[in-house]
Length: 289
Image 1: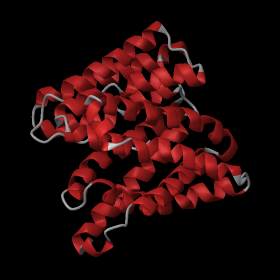
Image 2: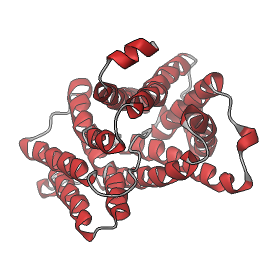
Image 3: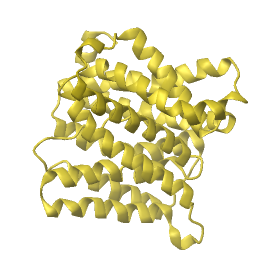
Image 4: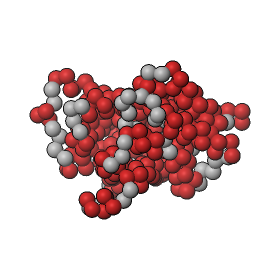
């Protein structure tokens, strides 16, 4: 995409494209999970993403101060947790359900940082939506998948807080060239052993393609979008991500939601959009599942 074509497109379209690519990467990862396992797939995506970022951006190691080390390590750990836990979740529950549960993380952060007790109503509304999505009254509840999705939500919430701290010192791709390699190293202890017995060289190409879908290309699109729209507008658009997860789950994985589950998605999206109206400093919602 050239600079002129990026300016010709409305910024909301760039944000929506980024969301679609992230969820497409997750949907396409399901087949690889069956071959390499969730941990192996998560590590491969992070490792290939790290290689790509190191090729296109030089890590600003000379700018790293002692007080930057812990936030950078924390952000790398949060990125690794999001990827590992989310891919583990979609082994057990539908993609849209996993995204909705994970979205409780940034929603809670938005409510907490708003300083208003009334904002806590939005995570509660989203939680009701999640209950509708999981349909516990049907008798079977995939507790393991839900637990993994909640862990991914913790990772996403931590990612938001730490991104703001790291963003005060490092911006854009330079930050990712530091944190994604950290995430790859931290997840290697569980990812590499799971992948070793099932590895084939063509898997590297597939991993590189998935890494381009998320995080490399979406991050570039999000940066372009954020230059031309407010954080509030951007965050409101990102509240559509659970709906994108349902859409890609339907199209790619043939996961058809019930009417009750559709209502649950609507509640989660509405809660996410409403939560963006509060708070003095908007948390960045972009993430790498």
